[in-house]
Length: 287
Image (cartoon, rainbow, N blue to C red; front, side):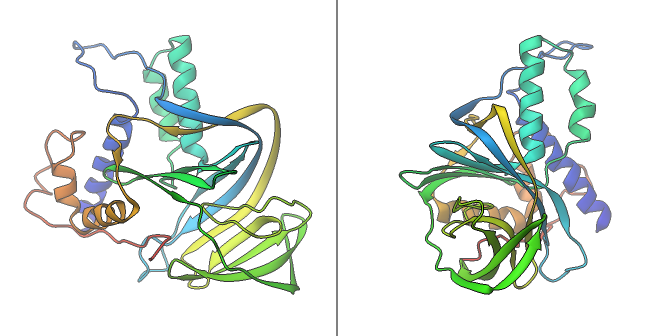
């Protein structure tokens, strides 16, 4: 079973790499030049908040965690949240495309910058409109309003996070109980993912079942700014939140079928054919 899961992982990585650019027919011994990432830039962020991220992909096995680095991009009109390595790969890809660098040199860089967090989103601060993209075997996109979170402030509880004394707050949202540590010294009512509504920036966040963790580990005031954007690839499936959740759960429930029907995979290895492999499904939103 471990061997089959490894083959599945390699196949999924092939999908991710294939989706970086549209396929091009090439002759032997050549490789096409890179093209610019297709994206819709909403704003420029001059403040970037870094959050160390960890999650348990299988709720029945807390001994295994995936870890990575995420970023909250804060602009005047928009917010963005995504995996830091995804942001870096996109930026490096565009640098290679503009300067017409050898695409082979990007392979090693991508190998050392594997994303761990497969959700990207942008938030309109005025209208509260959100656009959310989730990359699974397929890439899904849906829109929704920024959710209201009914926080209970526990100002008597104090904790130091990244050198800052923070207050505690708790809430129940989307099927999980959450606890957050925030600082009013940084009066931005935002945090990781869709979390919002506290009287200060969220410095640490976790669910009480210890499945998801975010902890601030850096804050960058960048004079040159970073783009706040959402990808606009042709293969993105634009749908509703409900249908996206069903699609991802179905893909996890039958990973071999999800792979066999994907245009990024020409043919499945013989080890996978005829086998139904169920992968764990432990979404951050349970409801």
